[in-house]
Image (spheres, rainbow, N blue to C red):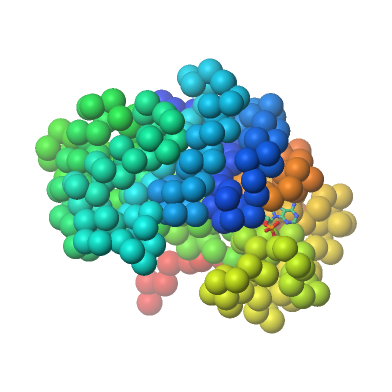
Length: 329
Ligand SMILES: NC(=O)c1ccc[n+]([C@@H]2O[C@H](COP(=O)([O-])OP(=O)(O)OC[C@H]3O[C@@H](n4cnc5c(N)ncnc54)[C@H](OP(=O)(O)O)[C@@H]3O)[C@@H](O)[C@H]2O)c1
């Protein structure tokens, strides 16, 4: 396993990490979660990602139970949670979601209880909140660090400008600013990591824990001939995800990428994950898996990186035709 520094922070994260969105509680039981987290940890993964909203809090409870049973040295892994969406779904009342001081503090406390942990290593603002002043967010996160409830804080799906605004407030007040952003990054979703955050990396430093490196499984080729039973896109309520990924032009590209992966001697999943971590601005790619075989395949992405030579990268670019660029016209 390779470990990368989280931007300018001192924390080291394994370049592949493991998350629980959709899978924990909805698709898999404690037994499978235990097996998958065990495989991840034994292969050097040191970062486990979670959020208050995942399975309405049940995902954190499951991860907490597994971690308790594993009895791994708490200093050997990094644990996260995220606040914004709340965990009561449609039952959320005012102040039970968002980034107010009240919700950030209460959500942190609740996540610690569910995860059976004394502190979170990483705590994310899961989305920007236009209804809360940025000063309130930065002061709250700073104070949570001071109280020892969290060690580092970050953002998720914020724009580069919003992250810079948080840094401005932190700098002006001598507070601890955000060190990490968790955004989507895969072969079809590139703009934030490859363009929007460039000034942030350069001016203040930024670690990234990127999500959906396989575009929810689409970049394995498993949806090329339809929707397999039991797969993520077959789950009720995920029509929005189907609409995002199952598009004719994208499917065509996935098939071409699959052919190229074969010629390169790797699977499409290995190639797609390796492609994300080939980008030095990516600190870690968070993997998701419902089966042991998937996780074992995805871990092979570490070896696939060296097979992505400049020639292969160029061929990928020629298939994708979606490199983001700054239009100054
Ligand atoms: N901050 C945010 O807003 C945000 C948003 C989304 C995710 N995340 C984080 O990022 C993590 C990863 O995201 P993700 O789950 O969307 O990642 P992903 O790697 O794009 O998709 C993972 C899913 O793809 C399928 N899959 C994985 N490997 C496979 C393989 N080798 N062959 C066939 N199918 C395979 C599995 O689903 P099936 O078996 O069900 O098909 C698996 O659950 C999440 O757990 C969460 O921690 C964060």
